[in-house]
Length: 439
Image (cartoon, rainbow, N blue to C red):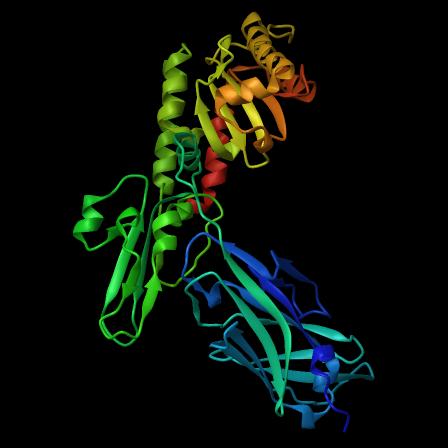
């Protein structure tokens, strides 16, 4: 029997946030792996091992000889403390498929339901995804991954969990989060001990809540240094939650524990109510100011721009004032001119004076930026390395009140490539579409 060379038979690829198999497992069917890496940044701890898919490559030789069956993958801290393990039990079972030999393997994970995969011989490597690692990562740490077989143990990789501190949110960042219909209004977490009833419950939101605190929750900024249970079996540093728990309110939130609870900022009924109020305003008002005030109060109407920072009436070098400015998720700075629901086109399809004036204002802003980019960004309070491009946006009029052909031609042949045009009704329609998942 040939000795098994573990280092050449098992490869630890890393941790993935999501894996999607289309029908049959890889290599027969396609596989999509999202955010695979051996280093994961977190702004809060503890982190659950179940939050990730632990992805390995196994060579088919592992399943060719029954006498090689049964080996372990072990996950330990750098100082040798066990974190989790996975038991692999392959076996060989020839079958027939168009006269091609196949190997059937059974893969068992700790605390998981075994599943069968059919892998034709000759493909070389197969992907194995393990997602039942129950341990909690209490601190930033490096974990060593090793495989063992019949007393032989070899390191096959490592994974590093790093701490990324989140600075306190600025008012512009808070407005941007309020503009996201899928954002969290409140995040709550419970930390406890399996051996005694001791528990700590903490919460984060923009403003502290007397109701939650009366119910036993601690605001993140009031957390102490460490949680210690009554029986002495469980400790958890709390500095990471105290410093950065508010980061879970923003975009890209990820479940870190089964004890984590998100309260959405908006229910679908609230979004519908806001949109209906805006549409009533379109029918009732002819001036710009009521629409400016409505969007300031309800920044979620600007959801289509995917804001990271949202500025209200920012000044441009003391010469101009935009209605809004948004730094979006693509690091584009959008300078927005909001107009009233005015008529946009003449009978011949040419733009009316009000629409031409709106474009002219945005052109003035962009021209000023082209001359003094650093000074403009400094005045808005944005760092130059945050911005990849600067564009303009004009929001004006109502599609339902315009000749469809005139509007379509205007959209197809814009005045300027660096200025986007939207109608006020587009804000309502896009918000309803984005918030569809809330229903």
